Image (cartoon, rainbow, N blue to C red; front, top):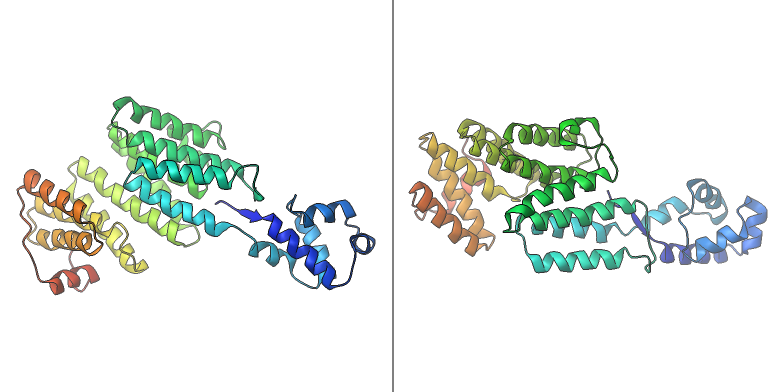
Length: 332
């Protein structure tokens, strides 16, 4: 996870608190042993104070300074990058990707007062963006380059990393995101079993993680990719299994994120198995696309479904589709 602080803001608040209690920097030094130079640097926003220093000063300033520091975290900015990046990786837009990259570089440059606790993760984020751009490239060799870039990103913190021993390491959220994209590239090289193993590994790691929107979205994305891998292997029962698990997870978390894709994979798999309920799943997928205003993508899906599977999607009463999405019908 990225953690950064607006130290200029924190330093200003520290100075105001000191003045509120009527003490000079020299007074603080005399009573706590924290040097005047250290106090000056903290108040100017030049350093992140040590835990022990904040504990000591809290008794003098009569306020929990650890909580004050937390209030100056810039994590809202960073979580916005997670949100934007996830959409860009799914629906790639080169122009938007460059704009986000430029914004990240600006916000985490040396000229700002944003102190980065783990700058390596910011570099990894930029490398993930580069790997994603190469993954979406129409040049065939770029896919191979994407894998190299993503592997190098993981080697920043795990120098001996390789896909053969991926289980030997501990991963941050952004590193799991990188590993996920590597698993997708591996599947395209017909190493689908290894890709599935990695996806299950990531899934288990995330289940042990603290709950949150970004963790939830990554879990749903894993279910989507497990569906696709089993689709590539013509393992239709597996597609239905992981699609249903993903759908159930979406319902549990009350989100429609990637729900259309899960219903689509489930519907096609049911069609291949001659399951009479396949149309319900497909109609749910198309209804969700329509509901979210993705009309162009909806037309693409309709055309692909007609050409590849000879399936025509009829109009259906919305109440019927809504029942399917809300899980009022139980189908396995």
